[in-house]
Image 1 (cartoon, rainbow, N blue to C red):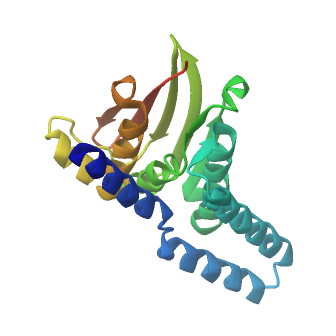
Image 2 (cartoon, helix red, strand yellow):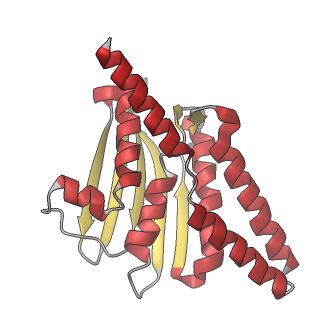
Length: 208
């Protein structure tokens, strides 16, 4: 009973964490919209405002914790589109999704924190063009979700906890815990990186 109680508390904590939308992101986006409006760039104002509305609609997900992979990836697409308005040429992105996996259900808000880390801990730190690539693929009974960036990277010989913190700490740990809570041992996360070259985070989830 104690274990069940602990798990319930844990679930509540993780739900509370997943509900926290980054206020900096909202503030910066509104700032960008105001700046566009001042330059009378009404077409972009409409585009970014629509994108922000869709971003929140998907994040709220009608109060459901589970989301389809299609919507989870669309959430990341809106996020990247908005960030691109701020970063301009410094940020390029590609999304490659396997359409056959579109209806796969997973906990919401697991990809966006990883993409956010890729920007803030990878791309922001370099003086070349940044590239972020988000992919979904099926392989040997597993769904593999990958987030790649060509940013700062780091030495993987550092300890795992240090690695998680280096990659943005709470957000990444939260994603890892939420996926483990749902899928147990059928899930794992892999991190590959090379200093000043790239970082790739891959989530392996069970397909059946």
